Length: 450
Image 1: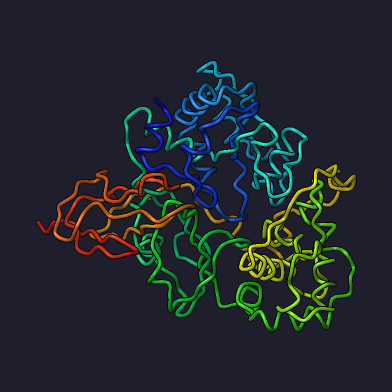
Image 2 (image 1 turned 90 degrees about the vertical axis):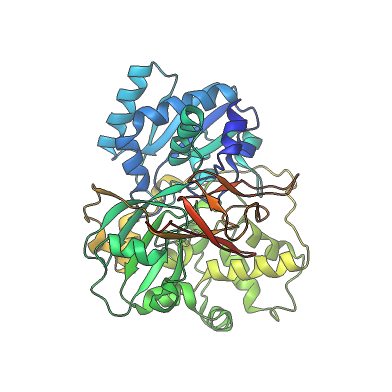
């Protein structure tokens, strides 16, 4: 059974937060939508998969389509991916697969699953809802490649394809075991000419930022999509690292209620009742955090997808509606307050087609446009001498080790699993060797010394 193979292989969403794929696909839907839009600028992982593994992906997509008994199988990608689309179309034709390709404009965040559902079907996913509520299942193209390996070879997820770019000597794609250190990944890209740098774990907009001091503590997980090395720029620090007290003070003092954060919000544009400018106005007249309660305006923040358009592109005062929304969401969660959809009609904005955000605008604003043309056509495959495999790298509960210090394990062997009834995905050894350390957070494996 396909779902059982997917679960045993430890497959989680490769393009997002890491929702266990066997759970997502354990449903019936009208549409199966494959996300092949590479949401974040500068990342090219999905590009590489489409160009080099189109046949494998199409075979897996067809099998998944049968499993969810869908009427429509759609690969949603961007219309300028000419080479990638040609590869997919050739594989579809060769296999006579019942799959169509939906070509979207190049805008951000085209890879957001709710935006993608709207683009393909014209349907708006209800507030706090999931695509299945409007008859859709959305899954990433790289996840399909992992499914192919599971169904054809019963191969678990032990390695990750990653974009390493930015201020590196040799920007490249790498294929490395789960648990490989970021330091090793940087070495594979020729290192960096910078003595001090910041890095993004993921893309420029939604990636997690760090600096050279904590870079060496980072390792590749099942959801790692890219590593971007950058100069220490004040704008990027202010975007990701400003203190919340400073953000609140600036919002209270400088928000001019221009509404641009709302007008350009991708959720608002597809009909979701999210108005970031209203949350900002509420902030200005409230005693925060004491006044954050079940007021309907505060609860709008729960609907934010944290894409960052409001603060990178929209706000003329360089304020941070996204960070405010995140803060409000956290306070509401602490109080157990949830958003309750009352069934109101969700009306898309008529100006949406004219207000989409081109990725080039984002890169210009962030000073990253010089990395757009980095050559990422080559792949480096590498296996380090040791790995540090996290026990939590997906939505749900952390896995529990099933091995102990001193055990010898083979690549692909189960080393951690969930407690019965818990949401998650099993974890497998990504290299063969000896278990050096087992802690509450990771398992360290080191190759045998020859």
